[in-house]
Length: 418
Image (cartoon, rainbow, N blue to C red; front, side):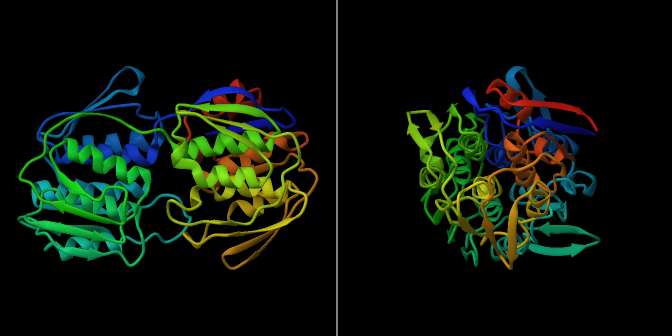
């Protein structure tokens, strides 16, 4: 198991290129189960979660070939199993995304209840309610979701709360259902739209992509296509925050500025100069951050996946700010570790009151989830002395070669065996 060692104080300067989006790659690879021809994906990020979903498809009988530059071919024409085992599903909650495709294409599925980051309950009940509304018979036995349906039927389903993976699962299942399915209060995230656009190119009939109401007319078959995965807006936002935090001047290339508008707005409020191009974002910061209240919201609001990183800017701001988490109920586990570095943060329910300090000091800290680990790395970039971030297998789930990209921008950072 590795850890990341940082010595703070270096100003980040230069250019880095954002990788493909993990949160788009996972549902897209799962959607390969719907295709009667091979699927080809480019701009696939080299991440542990992507490896897990590839292994999972291999377990059920798909042939997966990983080529140069992470070009991935998935041939799911000879599936021999509809069971997604606990051994793989326990490491990644997104494994639940194979449930809808397996059930829609093969009439049955057995998927272990998922595991993953401990940042909230993130229940799968919305997935199951939606599939039951489409006519599936579902039982939960011995830790497995067991679903059966000769053919799913179109329905109208309202999400009590917007769910990204719930929307993706039901949208995939509905593509092969008989009749029309309407999903109301659907998630609007760019990754959901990317999946919908790919499914349409495969032969699906989905309208309303990018809105909170999706209308899916079921078809009898889907074919294979080549699809380029969109850039990772959370990775882009993380490096944008890092540039501002270190009073740097860095350009994130290969990004889609329209997908990070809420992050751009907050960085500007904190004093950063942000310049946007067609596929690049430049962030420059010369002074200590100004405090800014943060409130996470579903897209297009401020992403919960950027809460921890932006909190670090408030930690060093000249003043106080409140950070309110509305998406997950247990997403402040980084606070205790930031306190070890000198941060002044008080928690009350789903809100954190942050009083800015002039400096942080290096300390050994422990990653507790994917985005928390990113915030600790950012804190280490500016802390006086040396910091070590342990349990970085969390960060490897969502950031491709983070130490190499930060070093390219001038950070004093290295990965070493723990």
